[in-house]
Image 1 (cartoon, rainbow, N blue to C red):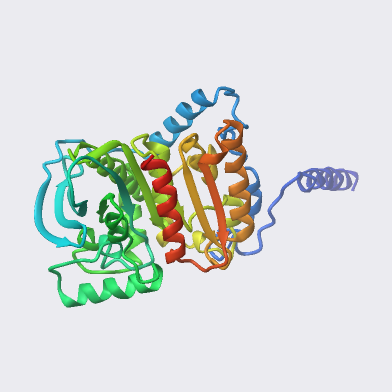
Image 2: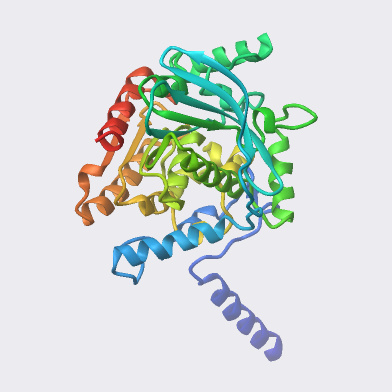
Length: 387
């Protein structure tokens, strides 16, 4: 009897020690809710981003920037071998004040990609913009979201017009900037337009693509970012482009592409990113689109969140000019997270004495890139690329 009693006391003490730990998960026939671990908040709260500027032990911003960029570029994973660009023009159309060329070039040794190249009329070198198309769960077109296509089937032209009306206030932003004196390059990102699926559009296929690239030692976001870097390198080689005056502009995932590109490459002088900036704290919730997979894979670099949050990556851009717009009615990006991210970025630019090079604004709009925003982006680009 005494042995039984002693065993019971020891068992109860042991049980008490187990349940006195700070965090204990008690299983109740499941561990996931809405495809998230039920303890995701604890995981999220342990992401302290030790390599962010201000958290890192590195006190020289120049040294920190070099180190953070190294982290970013390493997280892009395997890069396809480079080769000469082998640029050629396939088709051309003259428009008022500029011409549009349908081109292709080698983005790597393995891949040749299509693009639109818009060139202003006149002599001399011009400032240039890499314009980066959105996601939008619309894969049949890519570059045609930003440049009015020509010599294409009527169905493609109609899709393009409808998309531009929906997201860009009826304005082809590539044509808009070309008409204002900028060389403009717009490529198809992997999975869109002429770089899409042989079997046709399929929203669910994003998961398989991401998984297959992981199996090959790569990531979808890494491929997109590397392609954007290489396309900027290509743009800088063109004799009519001033390689010291190249900017990046993008909306939605195009915005994510824009600040990722600028963080990874100093070929980009000035960046405008519309409707993609937030923090992990607000994006990783049960209600946000980011936790559903699919499109999220186009913005995920494995392991990077253990080092840097989204605004910390964008901080690598400093001291270069950066414009960020978000919409107060944008359901994809919680407003509190937008303000937090803007605050993080403001501290960085302020700390380096270049406050005038950062412009952030929340518009009373949904997820869109409207005409008024476009005019403000043009003003920003002119200020920094045409001075």
